[in-house]
Structure formats: C-alpha cells, structure tokens
Image (spheres, one colour):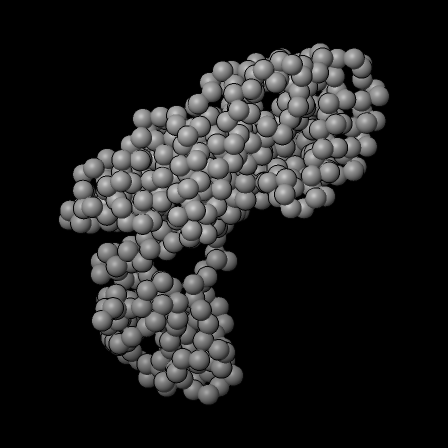
Length: 549
C-alpha cells in the first residue's frame, strides 16, 4: 500500500469526481482505470445500425438485422486482403491450384440461396483450415487441401463456408456484440488460427476477430445441412461430407499428431459424432451417385503433394527457430530449399535465422530473395525493414516498413517507423506512428505506448496523469493522483483552483517527486471546508518521464 500522508483515518471520503472514495482501501493498479466509461458503438467499424427484421435467405427464418447486406459485403471486401496477409498470403507458387479451387467454389455458389460476390483463394499456410468472411469472401489453406481426398470433399468444405456467408453467421455474431465489444476494448487479438493476426492494428483487427470466431453448434449444423444440399445441386456426391466429418472426428480424438495439426480447424469448426450422424441423415434425403471427382482432385493437387516434404521441413525449421534452436532451423530450411527454391516463405525463414543470429546483411539478402519470389506478402518487407534498421540504413528501412504496412498494418512496423521518425527529428510523425502501434497489447504495442508517453507527456501531462479531488467527512479537500501509464513519472505538478470563504479564486500547487507506473497516491491539501465539488478544480499541469538512471 502506498502511503497517503495527511489522509484522516476515517471510513470514507465522499464526493470524488467519479464516485465514492474509500480512505482505507488498498492502493490499486490504475492500468484498467476508466473501462466502465467505454460505450460500445457500431461507429467503431463505420457501421450505421438500423434495426429491422429480414428473412434469412438460407433458412427462411425471420431475423433481426443490425448489419445490412451492403455492410456485410463492404466488411468482406475491406477485410479480405488483410485477412489473407495474416494467414500467410496467397499461395503464389501454384496459381493453377487457386484457379481450380475457385472453379469448384463458383460451381457451388451458383446454386446457393443467396447471391453474393463470392471469391475463393488458396492461402500459403500449412495450418489446415478454411474460413469465410461476411459477403462471401472465402479462403482455404494449402494445409487443408492435403487432408482431402476428392473434389467432392473439397466441395463439402467450400459449400460449408458458403453457407456461413449466405446465412449471415458472421453478421449475426457481430450483432450479438461479441466482435463489437472486443474490437473496441482490446484491439490486440489472440487469433489461434492466424499466423500473424496478433500483430494487426487498426481496421485489420476486425478481420482477425472474424477469423478467430468459434462457430456455434447451430451454425455448424446449419452449414453442414445446406452445404450438402448445395453439393447435391451442383452434381457432387453428398456422402463426401459424411466421410470428411468422420475423418475429422477420428483425427480430433487422436489429440496429438494429425489432431494437433488440425487444432485450428477444429477450434472454429468443431467436429462431433452429432455432426456425422446428422450428415448421414441428410445424405439419405439427397440424390446419391453424384460426382466424387477423385482423379480430378489428385491431378489438381499433385504438385502441392509433391512439395509436401519441403513444407514439412519448412514447418520443422519454423518450430526449431521458435524454440531457439537456430542450427536445427538452418538444417531444416536448407532441406526445404532444395525442393522449394521458388517458395518465398523458405527464404524468409533463412532471413529470420540470420536476423536472430545478428547476421543482418545476410538476412537482408534472404528477404530480398523472398520478395523476388512473391512481392505481395507483408512479412518479407517487415523483416527486411527491421534488418536495415539494425544496420542503421535508415532510408532503406523506412521504404521496406512502409511497403509492409500498405499490405498489412502491424504494431511492429508502426513502432519501427516511429523510431525512424524520431531518429530523424520528426517528432510529430513519430508520435502518430507510436499511437497507431500502441493500440496493440503485444511487445511492440507496449513499447509504443511508453514512447508515446515519453514524447507527449511534457505537452499534455493531464492526458496521462489523472488527478481528482474529493471531500472527507469534515469537508477538507483530498487529492488522488494516478499514473495510468506503463512508465514511471516524476515532478508531477498538481494544481488546485478553488474559491475561498470570501469567494475569491485562489490557486495551490503541489509537486509529487515520484509516481510509479500504474500506481496512485493521495494527499490532504489542508483546504476547506467545502460543501461540493463545484467549489474546486483539480488538474495536472506538469510532469516528465522518470530517467532510467
């Protein structure tokens, strides 16, 4: 407990600006101070909420519609590109595979109950997963394609995702407030199936929220039912949806091994025996003998399957680097390179190894090789910019980092850009970059928050150091000063303006030598008695960040 010199030993002191003050309560952390004042607003996403009822185009049920069809489409269009970036980027090594998946998807979209601007893409991620954004923007990772055995099973996956979009499952989740509240109060996202979702800041955080959403049991069953109907209508054998779910249930029950690799898919699309049984029942109501397309699927995915040993080595290299085993990571990366010389991710892995080992020039060369293979993925530019900064190649670093944020806004890039702007003396630009990065609660976000305070505190001390006044039982003025930042501050000057007993306006100033991060202190002013808070004003007029010395 911090000492509170001069505070009378009474049970309570009342009439503080924002509620009752208890003199004998423990001093509390103020990092979360003011959360109750947030108001969840759809304006955070640029949505104009007009309540009304609509008919769900898939189920025929009447539903409350707070997110319009135009807004669904706009959200999908705005979030599709950044969502692809945070999932590894488009699988550029095999555009024919993407064209094949797009063709299957559009065949199913033609028979769906809701016409949307459907798009389908294959992403360069080993994580077995698929997802749909509102408005019909759908993706499937290459890691899931290697788990499937036929075009009909691919149709089962894509049909399922089409229903998620057509039946407004994402929009309904947003209406329930799950995403609205989360994005407003905590922009750092723990997106389990996203490789880079936790780095995002700004508008892209909504996409990370959408991707990390766990679908309800009802939504999954509904997507299975209507997805199988779409399969049959498009000429596929709906029994493939049964065998697909049987495989997923078996893998999920294994726990480790393949079940572990499929954890991301199972988190957002949980398999169950109930789903298998429901799919069997649905299959009996649909025409049998449809197309399975095994040979077509094997031919379309042949090159991907040939590359699987290389991707396995790449994944092992990533895991080794994350475990701080750079030598093992290097061996795996070199093994992957022998069969995947055209894969940018492998060159980026080599760059990351060199970056960790402080071989910055070599890292830059590898990141440049990655960009030569695929110039549309943010991560290569981000890491290249970080390596240039380590070599004090300021302009090259800035160029790479700016290219990175154009593809995906991340806290890491904005923080690095802030340090570059500060280094060249452009403090206003640095402050803007830090503020953008500071919306994240990751390491870069925390560093940016501290840098923001360091730059902005001298000009705006009251923005970061909160002061409030209240009266004890005898009407004497007590002041509480709280440091809601992550950095310790010193020389905090607290000013009090008040009216004396004759009505003359007077001022009093008190200085606090040290105020630790996230802590508060209180002191008695000796002023009063007062009868209401309207008789005084309290504010912080000066403060500075404490030196590290």
